[in-house]
Length: 445
Ligand code: SF4
Image (tube, rainbow, N blue to C red):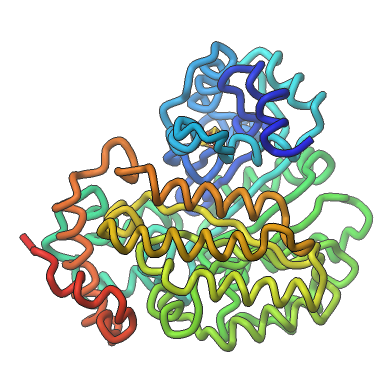
């Protein structure tokens, strides 16, 4: 069954159902927050509840209300991203499909008919232990990166931002790291307790994220658990890593011997444009690390997650070509990509660009997709992600329903990158010559 058939035959009869509300979670143990996938805003985990029920790090009251809403055919407010895609028409396939299709049909039926207040064991989990990270990407913020924290501590808040993104860049988000290193964190304790009692048996995939998880001691502790408990768990392991030059790839490869591991890494452009967007990246070192992982044969696959923002569209096709070359060399199943459209902070969305640039990038992507449409190296979801990005650039006018109007988003785009250049020693106009004229003509408030 292809993605569209799955949507029409399996999901649509269940109204607004999405299995991620039951079986998938992202949990930030540093801040004690969780969400079902990356789109709905995170909410707090109840510290009282986890004292007696460690599964409450996932089975929160908020998710149970969303489950009920889905069972009643309502659209949970936080799921706007998927509905924006599906409401475009053109048979667009949203993440609701990808997040559900990975589970057996019986599991979907079980979730749909389970009383919403019941606790459910996760099948896929993304977990972040803390925000330690040596990168400070432009679309990230201090809540997820200790290097971003240092930028704000040294240089103060970003100024003169007026749209919904402004709060991301004005303070150090101390609530994201509630406990100091060495202090007991009840959320981490609850995770390891749930892991030991249930999760290591029921979880299909555990994905460790950050910050940069390979710079967190808890990640290595978990990898040690797998090493010391061989055969006890069949959970597939996945690690999100920026694969920066500081990442200890040798230690990683030594730690995962005999395990089934996927690496997810972020990138959406090439060369110095990639290094501008993802501050801390060394593009050549990143590519060399990707190749080393693939050559080692200890990694099942490397998946590149592209966060589609206003700056990456110039060289996104070059990155996709690079990934196709890797597929050619290492095999279709060992390299894949996803295109995830940035919505927050909305002033970095591709939708802030003027129509002529959007149209230019749309045409480039259409050509790239047409050239690869029949390639046996392409996955169906990759072609679908490309098509939905092309449609998004064509049809969608605002990044999300509460996005501020365009002049304010463009003000923040200009204000932000001026300050980013000064703080990080970068040069927007030199790095993105195609955007230079539009950028220099921006009317700043
Ligand atoms: S419907 Fe979309 S936004 Fe909501 S949980 Fe599922 S994948 Fe996430």
